Image (cartoon, rainbow, N blue to C red; front, side, top):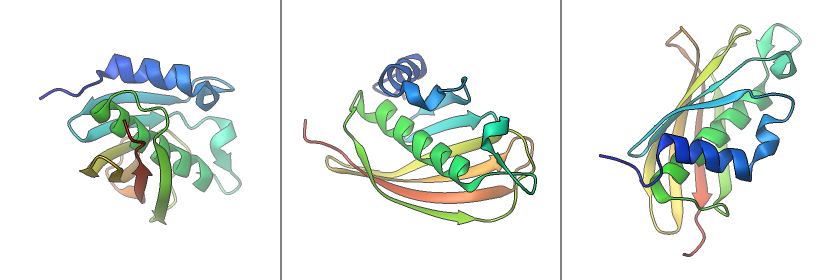
Length: 141
């Protein structure tokens, strides 16, 4: 089963509509999209680290929101004005400095709302460091 937007099309749309996400150098890498799913990696550059030797909470929050948006785009098509209406985060353990992987699964993709969950892990370690749920409002077509 395919998605309305391919991986390459979703990447191109994100780069054109949200270039600010890559300001300071490319850090977010959309690796896969599929039916109701998306996977993204964050390069844990110095700007995403915090004192105490870990990736910052705001960096994980941005990653979760961005991969959720990518999953919605890939499965609906280019909807630039879909907006986040709710995000909830559970920080489960402190990741060591290093790249993070975010796996998104859409739980509902309706005409007006999309609901999904994101599991963030340190690359190479299957333990979830952050679990997020989010809701997006989808504009009328």
